[in-house]
Every structure is written in C-alpha cells, then in structure tokens.
Figure 1 (cartoon, rainbow, N blue to C red):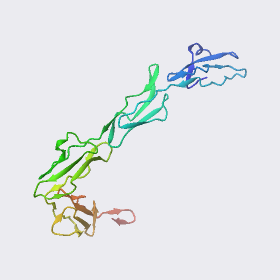
Figure 2 (figure 1 turned 30 degrees about the vertical axis):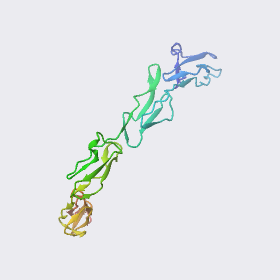
Figure 3 (figure 1 turned 180 degrees about the horizontal axis):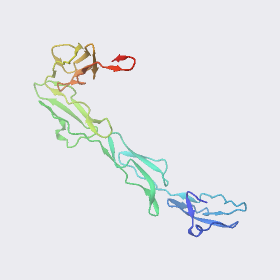
Figure 4 (figure 1 turned 90 degrees about the horizontal axis):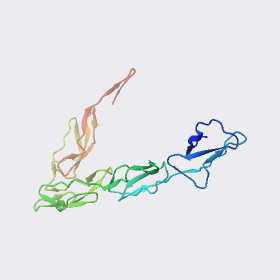
Length: 258
C-alpha cells in the first residue's frame, strides 16, 4: 500500500505477495517523524485487504520562522510543506523573499531563505529653490515621514505649501507630498491650443492656481484634459489638450463619423 507519509522498508519492496496476518513495516518519508504511540505497520487481513494505515508518521515542525523588525509574519501552519508570508508596517518596504516555506533540510525541516528586512522607504533630498531655503540642510537622510519647511528670502513672497513630507504611492518608492513652494510671483504663460479655444478663465495674466477650460472647434476631437491649472513652476497641469481632426469609420453599409 502506498502512503503519502511513509514508504515500505527496503526488505519488502521486492515482495509481491504477503501471507494472511503478515505485517508490512514502513519508514517515514523525509519531512515526517514517527508517532511513538503508533506502530508503523499494516497487516494483511483474511479478506485479502490491508488493515487501515494509521497516521504513524506526522509532519515535522519548522517552529516559528521569526518576525522582521518593523513588520510581521502571517502564519497559518508551521508544519512541513506549509508557507508563511511576511509584510511590513506602513512606511517600510520589504527587502528579500515575501514568503517562507517549510522544507526538507538534511535530516530535519527548516524554513527556506532568511527572514526579510523591512526598510524604511527613502526619499531623495528635497529640492532647493531660488530665493529660499529649507530645514533639511541639517539632515543626512530622508525617509517616510520626514518633513522639511521652506522659508523665502526677504522680498520674495511665498506661494504654495511651506512644509512638505516624504510619502509613497506604491509602497516601494518615496516621493515628496507636494512641490516645494515658490519664492516670488508665479505667472504662467497665456495658454493657447490649435483648432480650439478657451471657454472659461480667459484673462490677461495667469497666477498660481488659476484654471482654464478649453473646447475644440467643430470637426475636431479633444485629446487630453479640457481643464488645466497654473502650477508653482509656471507650467500648466494637466498639460494643455490637443484638438485632432475627426475621423470616420467605414463599413460596407455606412460611414459613421466620430
């Protein structure tokens, strides 16, 4: 009889028939250990069938796999063949394998790989700005949660957020929460698009956070956003749309213009 947790001893492997009431002895497969309370045998019964095979070999345990600093391990089982998963706390990224598997290691079982590291997500140094400075000049590293505050030189009025902080969108890479402030007036160039026009926000001078809405001329289709806003760096965001000529789809029966 083939068992998932044990195999016949070598002396029985070439034996094709067993007399009634004879026993067959088993040895545990790798990854399993003997249950001392059960005999690793089965018996040939009078009806020509084998007796029920009790689970005399149990899965070995890998024990607790360990937990990363600033993270945790999710455990459903610690026995041979089981898998555990590692996660990091907010603001940290996982370096290494995000999982471990209880595998055979020599005559015992052990968790595959090493416990991963949960590294605090880093940010590049905050950008310097003309006519101003920030408090980060005294800091060596910037990581998730770090914040800096900008201050403008005398005579250059600030525009935008004075303080920004290191955050993340993808859980792997750090980025600053906003663009640094501007020291001095923000003025965006008058927005113009070909084959279209401004339908709101039309003025001679555009300052920070001024917005404009566009529409295309008849026969043209807009690609991009219809609304754009003046940003701290004198640019428009989202980028100004493009008005492209309309197209027709031909079929055997009709033409449908889009």
